[in-house]
Length: 304
Length: 300
Image 1 (cartoon, rainbow over the protein chains, first blue to last red):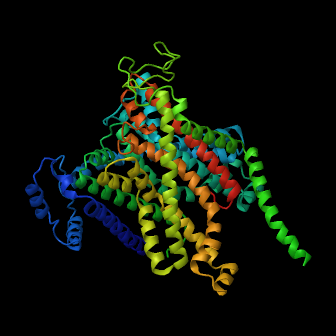
Image 2 (cartoon, rainbow over the protein chains, first blue to last red):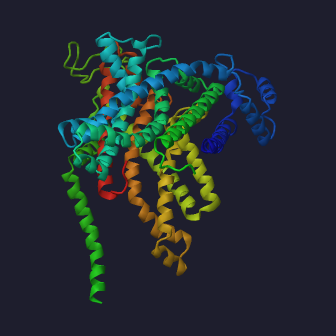
Image 3 (cartoon, each protein chain N blue to C red):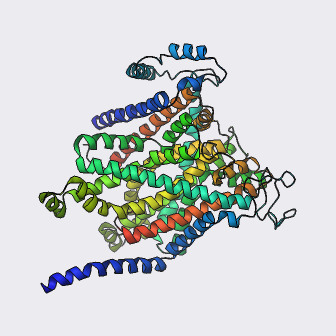
């Protein structure tokens, strides 16, 4: 618990730095007023808006105001939807989490058996096929895979809907598109982690005392290989969340990613900031959780 | 004395044999050879694009919109891989698209590498406060997906080719900074650096003469592999409308047209995607081979 509290404390400078970077980018390099007001506005209107938003104050006062608003969760209103930006983002959160979890499940279903099998049958045809597939999965942009899935499974054979969210069928193609890239990376790492463990002394001992191979693999090797796999999964959260941004756009999936990309295109800065913050906090929290699980799985790691 | 001249002679010979060994290992490694061939091929296509393309990539042809590839009914050998929604030649656009992919991929990686090497050297060599500030910044960049920073910057500055390179370079430098820092920390304590300092060598000289050469091989390996991920990122951002803007041509941009017409015209989205996959595959193969040859200690 003490460790958890410490880790939480460590995330504060990270969040602080993110706010600073966003602040510098939005307030100092760009002219936020011109992003908020229509292009036909008169100079007086611009001046009035500038004054009312406090942009004539010294820069450090602006920063304190900005931080004060952030702590209260006030990112301002979206000028597109004319409603509170944070609420807009939070409404979209369930859809993104649903997609992220489904993709992770698919990645695990694909990578765990393939990673283990290719390690056991090292240098076999299957191994070659799996490692080759993993490289291909890494080289293929996941949004292109998404488009190809739409082509084959929604257009040519009309099994799945082309886009949108609603039924279980809607979830299948986007999560395969997103899950495959992650599965490629995980398969490779599970394979190398299994290979390392299979070469160790206690495996030789287990074999030499006459255990069945299935027992050796399941009980001795896989359980130990699981530990690095959890870390790998945690490292993939960032990739996963980054991937939802583009996958949501390909499949018109109504999550945070789609909202964020639209907001960036429309220069809707309140929404951009709120979405970036929520995603950042989400990623940091899931990394922290994975770190804890990792430590629970492997008691050899000290809490220091 | 004899031993000394022998060991001095041995130095250039070892260098020559390293190159020989590299070439030998390249042709021994099938994937390395394939990677090199693909990368050379794509580079040649990019360089000679005007000579290779049969059409101007931006030239529209209202009569021949969404024409299929030549081997299908209704296709024409005039447009080998068909045309897109504005009647532009898909093959010519793929040929020209290689220029943007390589240009953005390589220049963003060089920029990121330059920033990363400078900050990594400062953090590792001077330590203390500098190290603290730089490494906390690196942690923050690593804590959240790169693409978020890119989106914020693009939202403020608006998309263009130069912004894209700056954004990609300015957000991916942390990997190099970390690598250079840890290499610097270990090199700094070696005897030859200590003796250089003892005879009065300046910091700058030590960095250039002793630290940089030790960093360079790891750098080449990581940079090559990062060209692959940068090419994908460029395509992703262009696909989202935040990267390359029309009338410039990019594979990612072609995919976004292709996504819209996927129900009727599969070729518009299929071929640019194949081009990206092939190019990235080539770069990954080349990078893996470089890692095996130059720097066997880095794994994954």
